[in-house]
Image (cartoon, rainbow, N blue to C red; front, side, top):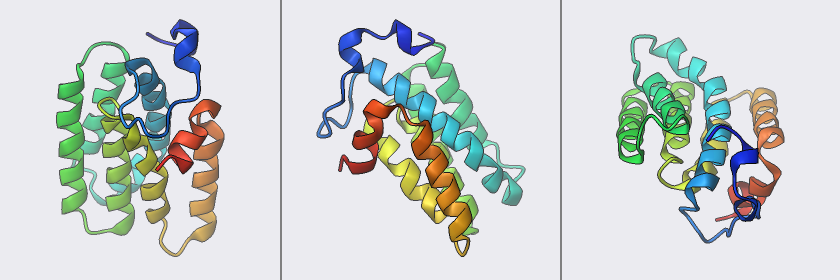
Length: 155
């Protein structure tokens, strides 16, 4: 599956906020959004830990999931590894960026992980409210409109 046009029309309805998992078609659409967000955050992690490939590997796994080359359980393993990288980091921006990457990959398994992307993004810019607000606004502008309420107001 490579695009929205391939998703069944009934899958394009506004998702139920109480459904933490959602359909695989919905998760795939959300993974594409979370990956776009995480790719922008990854440099914050790499600036502090250029030798640690776990967040990049988690994003690569999520991309492989979108291409149908990796199953959900394998992607989850990479998401867990990414969160381990976050626990080992000490810089607030690096921790938050690794968390965004881990949550982005985690959406392959559970859609509600998408709700954590803006939350962790906000933590990545301590002391730089303008940069934080700019990144959050970019994320919100990119989200497929039918998922806006699910991600931002759903829990």
